[in-house]
Length: 170
Ligand SMILES: CC(C)(COP(=O)(O)OP(=O)(O)OC[C@H]1O[C@@H](n2cnc3c(N)ncnc32)[C@H](O)[C@@H]1OP(=O)(O)O)[C@@H](O)C(=O)NCCC(=O)NCCS
Image (cartoon, rainbow, N blue to C red):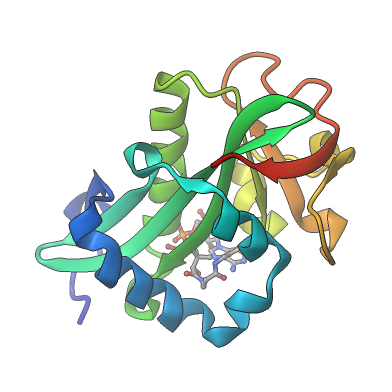
């Protein structure tokens, strides 16, 4: 049960192996079994989860949100694929999701990554610096609504000339 309403009440921490079960449950509750049919899921199955830049939002002992990032490459340029992101239904619209994306991008930039790519809702991700326009030449293998493919540079020019399929890096 989520009782806190202030975003200042949450602690964001990198995901650890001990968090795997709780994070999997959050994702399962948010997306249901339909998530396995998504094209990006094929990339995640074959790619490497980067726990250093994947975060869990905690309120006390309770995990209320999570975001995962994976190693990928586009046209030979290494970067990160963001997703899934999930916030417990009882804690939504309190800034937790935005905080998770912002923290993950900060950590990814500090680790030297050039860009983050994702498939998601523009109304949520555009204010967080993601652009579908900059991802026009980026392809997610499989059926995907291209308008939902977005990219954010983590360094100046980090998203320049991104073109071609997103390839998982093991
Ligand atoms: C999408 C999700 C992660 C957002 O988490 P959240 O903690 O509720 O988001 P925030 O409170 O940080 O919202 C940040 C902003 O985005 C807006 N927003 C949140 N969810 C949104 C959505 N689905 N569509 C459009 N705008 C959204 C909020 O209103 C807020 O705007 P504001 O700052 O102007 O008030 C959460 O709703 C969720 O887990 N959904 C189910 C899983 C899912 O669909 N994930 C993938 C999304 S592409």
